[in-house]
Image 1 (cartoon, rainbow, N blue to C red):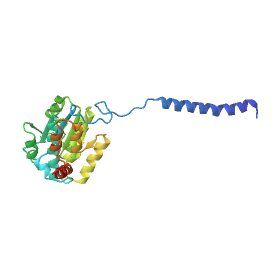
Image 2 (image 1 turned 90 degrees about the vertical axis):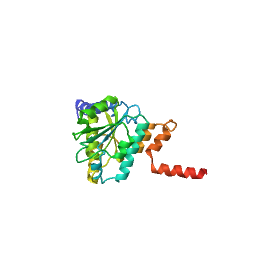
Image 3 (image 1 turned 180 degrees about the vertical axis):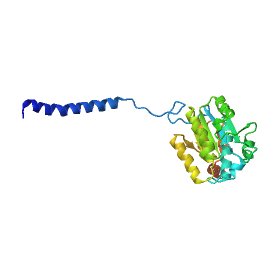
Length: 242
């Protein structure tokens, strides 16, 4: 082989390796980005100073069709969440679809727990589309929105998707929501997951906003949440103390 051809044969592979190394180095030097919540913090916890609770269509007529959670449990959970939010000073917005129509009024347990909180009547399916509901949320100036609704895949999911698109940080409270079949529950959860909207439960949301057990409101918040297992532990403690 001629010397010139031999040099070409050696130089070409070296050039390819050098180019590949440069490409890898450039790629590794590129900044790594991560998704952040609209509040500015990745996976941010709920803050009582930045949260608003929106309760959508917890109406008597709709409750009669709930099949994915025990109706008594659903009532307990949404009322407990509302009470804890009230104790913590969280703004609460309640809305109902045509309460004078087939779905009926908001369950009395919830309205009794929130005296003075008006129920915003609307005709829109998506609560965010109602100008009064939207104005009530915007008026709070808060970006973290806890949503619970009946049904899960419509009344909770639709406004959550719209709020996310509008730059808010929505979270859906699963066990303070309900729907009419397991299939609907699955559809709702998959759609929320696909949009990157977290799902939580009523008690976790409550203690997340409480933040510390040394808070002066802690005892009342735990009382409001009324967690069955915690009540048993408390009762056991009192018996042992006697």
